[in-house]
Length: 292
Image 1: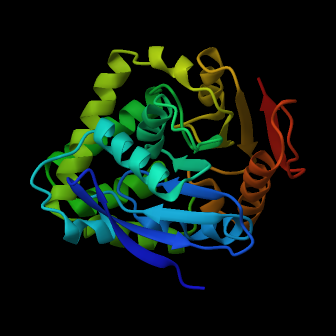
Image 2: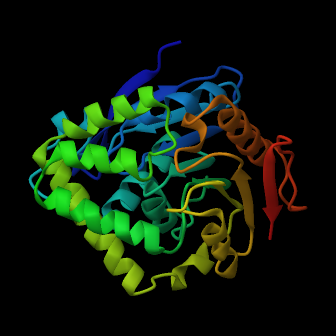
């Protein structure tokens, strides 16, 4: 079934392209939040299993993908702006769940501190509360390429670092997509990198105690950029945290091979469909999970 396409007017400021993948039997709706340089297409593998149980909402940021043509894109938006957009979409679709990937987790975390009333659970894939040495090195190199607005270099950098565990077909798609972005998108990513670096320097974690719903952090075993060990630091700031590590996977977890796809599917559905009051949920035998 094809998704229902709509352009949502957010605060009379941004127009956001959305895709609503309806499941007639579903009683819950989940919104997926892209990582940097990504569009709705990046969740193609994820929709396949989430769509069997839930209504799934995908969207493009105002400067990206199919939203770009509907906006003036005459200035860069902040992660706080993205959080406000997400809050509006959660309300618009009356979503119970949200799942973010990588840097999409920054805006999602900011949105959760506002306690959207319909939201029951949230998932953070390939997310870490700190910028470790590999990530800082990656971001420093990315800033050089972004300042040059050199899409070819950005594409190769992504594939050689956070995307190094992807299959060759996905690497080719990645490079083709990234190398053809608009100059505004490179400037937008440049601004985001610099904002996240400033946020890290000022350790803006004090508001996380406002989050009052269960969270699942899922990371790849071989992802040194947003590592499973670093993700577990979230337990110092948020009470109801659950953690899962996908074996033999890097940063792009469910896109890297079938085994990782199955493990990710099992972890996500287990967390969303089972009570987390006892801090336990069912996982695939190849998946390492824990709760705090």
